[in-house]
Image (cartoon, rainbow, N blue to C red; front, side, top):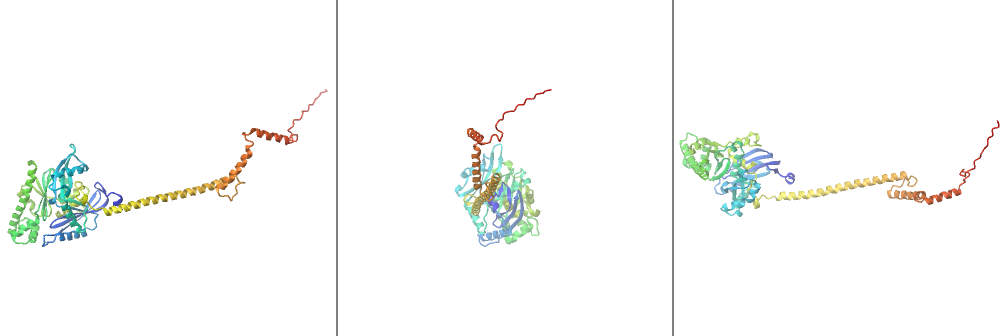
Length: 495
């Protein structure tokens, strides 16, 4: 608590104190979570969890979602920060070019720039952005703005609140995925135009990346469950049975010809819908920026034979997003060198503090996380510090005063001792008070001054008078002070 009150949590992406962060990706059919530990500039991916949502007869899956969220929070243990993401399907994206390169300046004008482009009132929305490209020479930036109606954020927060979760950061799923892609050195250096396709259980999320820059985003409400339903209907089996068979055999040849036929037909129809989206992406860009590669990830990317099938059908090279490359991100590594599963890539992207999205947060303004407890603690701490400071000053003053008093007493004793040495017959041994000793010393000094003043140069006449009186009373002859006449002798030599 003290470290959060007295010191900032981090400086840039450097965390002054270690903390555990959990990123949660909530889907219609499953929920995944990833726990990372940050300390300084180092990030360790500690734990990944995926839990499927139990089937419900009703359309509302709130109860099972809440129960699964509670289970996940129990499994991850104590964390200091919770990060979640809104699905891109409820977000309006707009690309802008602005004459600034600093995040602070762009933040000041972004609402005014994007307001005319929104299909709803800006007052009813939350707006934030990421910088996808900068031109230092032109002093300009291209940004991708995300605008979300507040009702979607409120609904998301209410769902989490039912599970006892208060997220500190709410982002957009595909923004986090792009930030993860951009942070991997091998992918960041690629200049090819690619489509990043997340094959989820209930939805397919697609990102169009041109020369490393995020340009377009689309979410299709079809996923692996839709594919399993189509296969199940064709074969007269349940969705669960069809899903189990799909995950075991994929599109590879089996001893069940009917399955191969239905699987091929269903996959072809499924990927034709994706082809339509990719074609629309290409038409919105330039012809020379046609998609050169498909990068698949998510639970559906694990299907056997999927990449060769897609490459042949779409006539575009297809690869699987290699999750082990996450360890190539500077200062990021996994605990015990474990590999992040495909089903937890999105939650990992949400949990990781990455430069591209670290300042992005849809939970702000009136929807910002309450800091009342922290504010209360800070106020109490400030009062305690003030009292401590005053107490320290009082103690210091008391100690200094005591020392001064001791020094005064010692000095007085030394002064009395010095006066006693000078006036031994005047100041007795029992005198201990400096004032009394000074009074007696001054009296003796005044007496001596009075005696010697008579002989000082200041009264020469008085001095001569005393000398005259002395000469009148002394015995001059006895003291041989009277001049005697000299006797003279005559010596005669009669020889």
